[in-house]
Amino acid sequence: MNQNTFGLDRGQWTFLFRSVLFIALYISIQYSPLFDLSNAKLTELISHSSRWILNNVYQENKIIDFWNGRRWVVSNGHSSLHIGSICNGYGLIFLYVGFICSTVGVPLLRKLFFAVIGSISIFIFNVIRIILLFVMKNQLPGLFDLFHHYIFQVAVYVLIFTLWYYYLKVYTNSPVSES
Amino acid sequence: MLFKGVLLISLSFLISKSIGNLLSIFVENGDWLRRFLYELTVWLNLYIGYRLIHQKSLQKRFLKVGFVLDAFLLMVALVFNLLPAPRPIILHQFQLMFRELLLSPLYFVGFYFFMIKLPKSNSLS
Image (cartoon, rainbow over all chains, first blue to last red; front, side, top):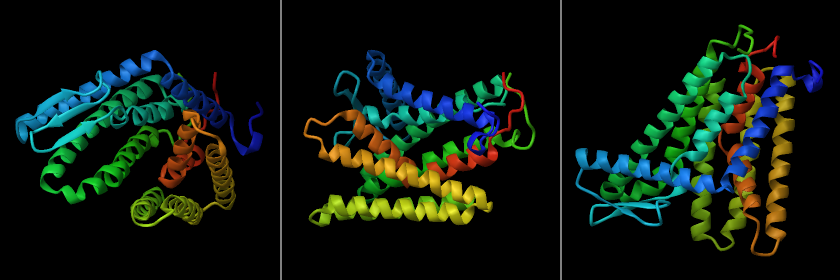
């Protein structure tokens, strides 16, 4: 590919190519048997972590496996919160790591560091989100939908953008070769 | 520019999603109205991005790519609605993916990082 095809340099073309590969990988993984297993494990981990923190800082809760690990229910007897496989942040972690793996000109160690730290941050954010949603369902049920569907969605995007920003910050003005 | 863009597009995203949700609950044919509202929000987001990007050439490219992605979203939505049930899940996934990309600040931020922040690699192996 030429250096300036459509005004994009080689690094940008490589980024685009890798991004498309990642999207294809994301879609194909969803149809593999491994996906069901890993997704259920992530949902279980998030549900148990949330319940453990809720038990220690808020009130005693039960946790019920609803559908072979694909859906968990945290309940205090009065109200309950369903945690499904689409709530576990799998897609967001994939998006975040996909961007990092697609970039060129950043040392591998930095990529690894940000991929791990970012994935853990998204996981922790998700646990905090579930805890707050559970508390909100008990204390402020009117605000539950607003926070569940909108506010937390924007908040997790801001977290991801911030991580990407710091990931690329050092390299903006200095060309670095791929290690 | 990045901060302003994320703030403004997030606001338009929040407002449009809230109104969209209310439309589906209270209005008959709310689903179609909601889709129209989301389309308007996509255009508003493209306009916000266009105004915030300073370089002329990048402004044009931002709009061009945005309109291509929007056209693709509309095409997928149209095909999905024309198909008889059971509809392929992959088309639904594509629809959600593209809608999320254009409604949220993801496209703006992605474009910013891609065109402005991405390191220029002169010696790729």
